[in-house]
Image (cartoon, rainbow, N blue to C red; front, top):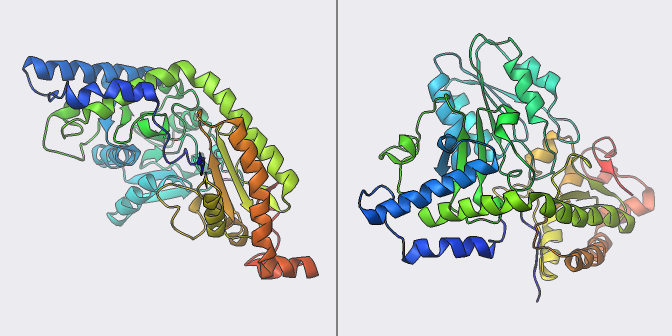
Length: 415
């Protein structure tokens, strides 16, 4: 069976050029970068070359890049590390309600330790309101963390405007750190930390055709952070542990490649994305696009399909060789309604029929044509077995479809 991989928000296929760059560092140049002999010096040079390549992608300086193992670690380092250095100035944190769990869970832990956390809402498209952010600011606010782009529904935030609202608010007497989780955006859309004005930014190799096991935290020059992994001098003592040199070299190469291809890749992927978004509502009734149509990640398609269950959709898609997801890669085995869709006001009965297709530069038009052809038949098959759908056809009532009958207020209806 031919497989069509449409779960690129959780991990992208490795670019062969990246793999070629990594190979020598497994079996030839395997010296420890911290060793002072020549074998280690070669590895150290490769490490710093990768750091420059990674920094160049986001218009940062090399010394502002801290290598980590994954986006989750970078987010944890940002949240816990910044709070640890700022807690004498205040104990209030602001995050959006649709953050990744690697932001939400650390702040919930900090909440148990006595910090105050404001979870600001989003609108029905997943946008954070500048006015809501300003209202949440307090004199003791020390950290704001708002995702650059949500990988589940594709909505891209106006981070520059939100940073400006925080920095110019006058609500606090001292410095407020602004962190953004840009794992879903970096390598997909242009990201410039100097233009954004952020103090910290998370990004990862595995979301841009690089290897798993390498990510980074950008930390603006002059901003202090407390190490969360101690025991060595690596990363200027901000993240201890022997460096995963092959993965870091691959990360650097991936950044170099996507920097030159980002515009071309975005146009290619967006064309395929728009084909799915335009065609499926023509072939399926009661299907709703989640997230903004404009200002959306180029490869993101998220639909809720009424009168079907998401688990059944995945199983039947898998049987046809199509790999898809339901939301965050860290939560898509959980059959509850996604916290992102819940925050956007999507009805539970509809949201449980959500499907997420995320595309990459490796997908083809032929693959998308196949998805558009196969998917409506899968939905029809499931609805033919649905007593809820049968009841709706007989009565025109959605009352038995779950809590809440009027779903149109919460979804972007495309018919």
